[in-house]
Amino acid sequence: MRRKRNLNLSDDEPVLDISSLIDVCFLLLIYFLVTSTIQPREQDLPMTLPGGYNPSVNESVQMLIGVKGDGSIVLNMGEDAEVLDQQGIQSELPETRERLKLMNDLAKSSGTELFVQIHTEENVSHQRFIDVLNCLRGVGVNQIAISNYDEKPL
Image 1 (tube, rainbow, N blue to C red):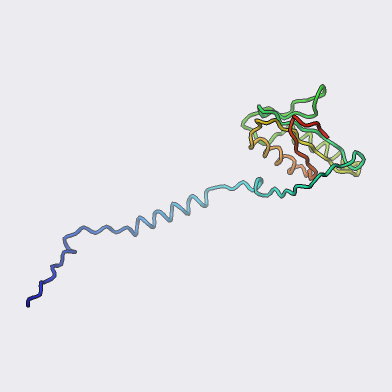
Image 2 (image 1 turned 60 degrees about the vertical axis):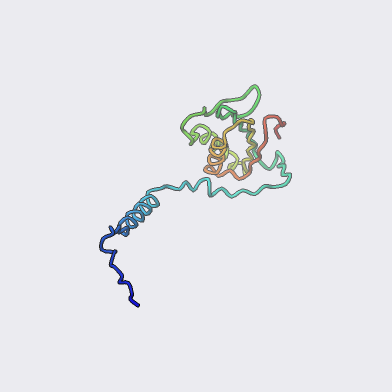
């Protein structure tokens, strides 16, 4: 019985070395990981949802902030409503931040805390609501209530 001789066909076939391609992929992955930015403000918002907390007027200074569907921020409701920040690219809300800082300093000087109630319309963008929460957190406001425009304010 004769055995067939194995012909060495590997010399005739083209070879594709992909080790350099894998190196380039890892370099690109590292580049994008290093150059990407993480916004920790939204991630670092600890929130506890109390059940039925209703502060008394004596223990806190109250402030009412309205977030309308078009993205504008309104201070107070009704006849003395004051539009602070309009919808735009700016998410820092400079006028709202300034007013909140002023009210928070006023509350601290009187020995109380600032209590902010946020009224939102139904079609408010999620990002605009987060911008308001970031603004409150940046000023140091810890007592917050959230409600809809349909509900009566506290």
